[in-house]
Image (cartoon, rainbow, N blue to C red; front, side, top):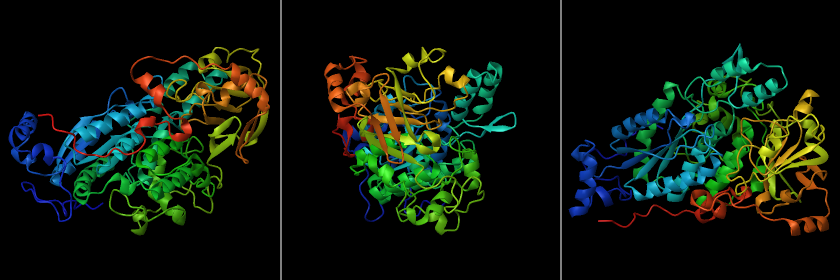
Length: 593
């Protein structure tokens, strides 16, 4: 992206467009004749806009998911101000508007329940308003895919800017990571190795600036995915939230979105099949979150890009993990930034990627490398391809078998190697609450080989598919020094978490998937190298159990939850709503006056 973003922009006060560009949508509002045009313009004037903002210049919407209820996104209003400066400079007319803020850290039962609602709300706002292009400001992990889904559906020229990670957590001389150390400190307190007072003090040391999780959790992962897909400018995923360079990038992005409107650069021309393949391979290289699978599938579904669950396994098998970042490694996002950011990883991957894939900057994905600006400055953080942090084939694996006919996933880099091939008897829990009620029981019937089966946590079952799958180990086993055990669930796990946890088991229990048929004592066999997840119960017995199974009662008979439960797709299909799959376009709605 060049600093001279006005090269293709008509001067303010004219209605001329560069040759070959389309008529602007906003002219149907602000350029209308008679009473209609007067109404649209006159009501906008009460905000003090000058006459010439209605002269035919591009109207750029700035979708802000900022809110004090979403800590990761709370600073996005300031980022919007920088975008506005760039839009004004390039001869555009910026208009900021709010969209739902989905903070996984506060929202119950899970922000995932509302990802599709954000996507629906944003899509309708993009289409119903006089917008020629949109800048998407996101932060916490569901806002990024939700806004990309909306952009994919309307296919208006769009550019994403994520809010950036927090500064590294610092606690008594050591770096601590958001989320990751929550699980670690919880286990330390339960095991008696850390006091409650020390744990409370550590809280203030963990989150010490604006921004999202600074571990390679889902928020950081999805920021990297936006950049790998080509929807976010280079380095956008890694500048810390409080770094002045993020705000400078926002100003340049404001200039660039005006260019994109005139050049008619749309999400469908950027988020192609090749771009999704790039994103999957980059996700493997950075040790990204398993939640990426669901979000990328949902975005692809809106675009009509053919992307299957098995693609995530096939495309990642020959990609090593290059980043030594928590939760799989030692470092944090601030270290990743100073080591060279995502462009350094992209340069290292080389021909494993479609390097010519176009991005919102108008340049190819590897443009920084071609310009000699993608150097790695710390080989402890970003490892070379021939000396990786983890070898190829250790990323997210897709499992299948009679316990997961629709598939399940496991993050190998966050699992214990000795449990990747495992066989044990099941201990079944119908909800997280049921497990927590007995987790401290010294007489709980479990041992180190037990497979904890946690069900009714899927898209329809909870509802919303919460991040509850990595339940902490029973106290009985912690006291014995056990640090990990196999857990199988139809829910999700935070990207900041770790453990040998099989996730997204599909179909989920609440719709009658095989997980609903498991009983205490059944043998579950996990074989990650062979990509299998098997319940060692014969088909005839499973059919007898199925005949006696009854579906759980709906969680609600009204509102969003009812609509969500009745229409949500399974995890292997991206957990979008069935009637939202596919693009709906940006056709100007009928006039109301």
